[in-house]
Length: 317
Image 1 (cartoon, rainbow, N blue to C red):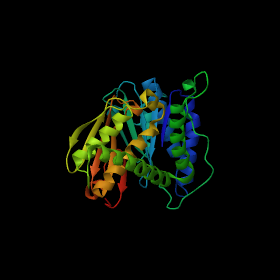
Image 2 (image 1 turned 90 degrees about the vertical axis):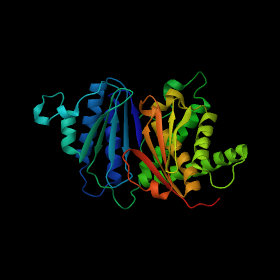
Image 3 (image 1 turned 180 degrees about the vertical axis):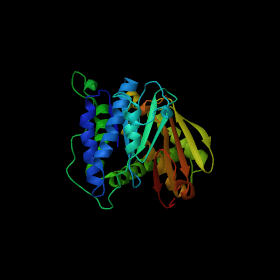
Image 4 (image 1 turned 30 degrees about the vertical axis):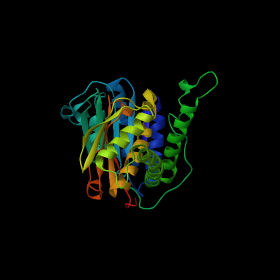
């Protein structure tokens, strides 16, 4: 789940949506209130400290959810935060969050600002919990994108993709959403891969070099500026200086999941398994994107920190 909020007044609405999401998919008796307080303290701190847009991500691919809050303000030293008792009313937010979360880390962003990551003590239920989806905070398309005749095609299609993925995750849970996005990526990616094969005459299993060329080609075709930083039998590292969606992607960071699913789907078909790690994202205020695609089931299955997704498939070429 990804949210973009540019007004602190949106934070209370998002907290309610966040709490509802955790409640529907957590084990009975989980401390949702502590998780919600952690959320509030981190988001409030980001607005007070950063003074600009804030991006919130919840990654729940394992037992415990990981909450990440990014801002574009000046960096700070988390080691100097201390405990809640060390502060007056202001400056206590991070200390309170650290006392409630299982783990809390602060990192300085290369593009400016900070990233605060908290592992929440809210175990996920083993069974699905399904109820009607709520209206999402900051729903797309963004109102200022409308022209004299309403919303254009690009804004409409982008909104359709993002809201559909978010509503699935809200109603059916994180596992169902990941499975859906992965399947879409494999389906769409297969067509893009076929076009690459026709254009280049490639046959059989694509090599890591061919996979990197395919990824760069398909992104350039939609006005991205991806290029390969590293190509080896174990992984492909890509960077991107321009998002195909322009600056509008910062208001729809969930679109990054489609990139990871397309890359992961193509790589998995050709190597038997893949995982995609999104290390930097223009969508959350980084100055560029940095994407690592791990190749083969032996590399894809390893546990790595960061926003990532695993794709498994058998070779059938």
